[in-house]
Length: 146
Image (cartoon, rainbow, N blue to C red; front, side, top):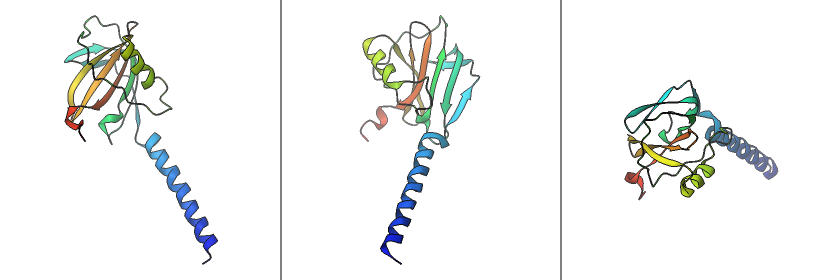
C-alpha cells in the first residue's frame, strides 16, 4: 500500500469524523419544545406566551428557552451568579452574550428558578422589564471546583 493512499484514507476518515462530531454537538440531541404555557419559577407557576425552547435528554445543561410573561407574581430576589450558556447558532432567539451583558448592566434581572433541578444543576431565568424572558440551566457550586 502506498503512503499516498494511506494518507488519503486517513484524511477522508478525519473529515467524516469531524463532520459527524460537529453534527452531534450542534443538532443531533436537541429537541425543540413548543406549546409551553407556564414555567415554574421559585416554586410558583408563571404563565408564559410565545415559548420557544430546546432541550436534550443527553444533558440537563442543554435547556434554553425564550418566552414572554406578564405575570404580576414574579419573584424579586435576584441571583448574582447567573451566567447564561450559549445556545446552538440555529436557536436564534437566545443570545447568551447579550443576556449576560444586560444582567451585568442591570437591564435584566436574573432569578434562580429551581435549585438542584438535576444533580449539581440549577435553572435560571432572566427577565426584562418588557416581559421578555430567557431560561437556561447551569452548574451550581457543587461542581465549581471540578
